[in-house]
Length: 201
Length: 201
DNA sequence: TCTATTTTAGTACAAATGTACAAAATTAAT
DNA sequence: ATTAATTTTGTACATTTGTACTAAAATAGA
Image 1: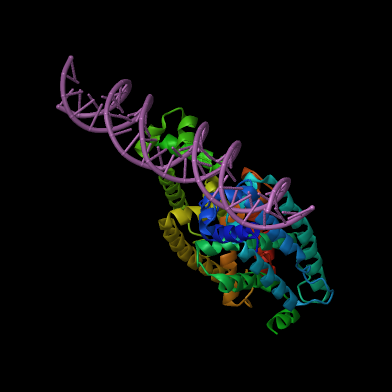
Image 2: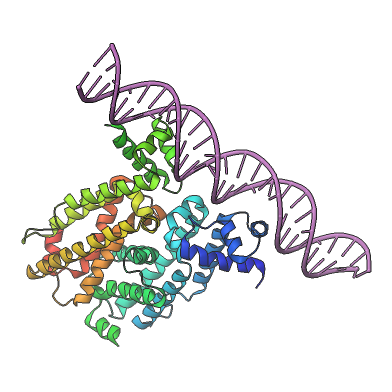
């Protein structure tokens, strides 16, 4: 692992543990036992590191398989997808803790976010349609309610990290599982009888 | 309005607009046209101001009538309650934008939050029970799912402000109405036929 | 081995911030 | 009107941070 990579790893760790409002380039340098000028050689400033980490994270997320891309995909696939996504988010949790502040300082990130949201929204709508055709979810739900559900899922997906720190303070897998379950439960009242049976299996 | 109150009003405005990571005592003083030492006379530092504003906010929230306290309260009351709460949150939105960072710096706030959550959780459970007895919501929903719903409502309640800034950037009433609607829709699939009719009226 | 390039370290400086303190100005009390 | 208490201001200092610049050290290429 070269210096640049080490910087990113160390920075991620410190940001996750203490927050971007506390950690400066000098802290990272001290933690690594190198001079802060050395970090400056690779990154202009702390924001530059944050931006790079954000890009890394989004790149990793984009490599994940699309939500239940196969037409016959059931609820099992969905649960796995959710867990994987939440794991990725947990690894880069500092981003979500400071999401608003970060986007205020770096508006480009907002654009990337909006783009991703649009894509994912359409994917989810398609998925729900898919489920409806399979008789897994109810047919008497208005489109606006599905749209709202998607918004809510997104909102929870982006801020479960913060909420967790505010309340239970679960760590690692426990946190991921808890909130994967929360998202799952959000889905429960939409399920048909058939859907419930499939979910239980 | 005395100086202390003016400080709080100005601070709230600046925090809401620019964030606690940017605004210092000196900024507030400059905005008010007084010396920063004058502010220091009333508040030890910026965190002291933030803490006071938080206390103000919670006090105002605690004065709100309990969720549908009357036994026969229907969905109309719920909708109004939600809107009022979201309005209060919007007034003190900076708190929610920086919630995690604030609680990290001032752990006392976390305690107050936990307490409030416990109380509200029980209130909501009772409300849902109430609705079930009135035939407004379904009877086939497991307790854990209701518990999850409460968590989700709380999570959205605490972070819709952040999510809004990240996405649509709605202002004032528009934001409040949008997210009141989102919370309402979250409730939709739990409604019985009777409940839907009541909601539509 | 010698030279050029890349990487790392050291230092220095300006700006901002928290904090402390004393003096001035204002207000209230007698 | 005089005194005491409160409020406000000005200033100064240590610390932190971002930033720039130079020199040293390490590495690679010939």
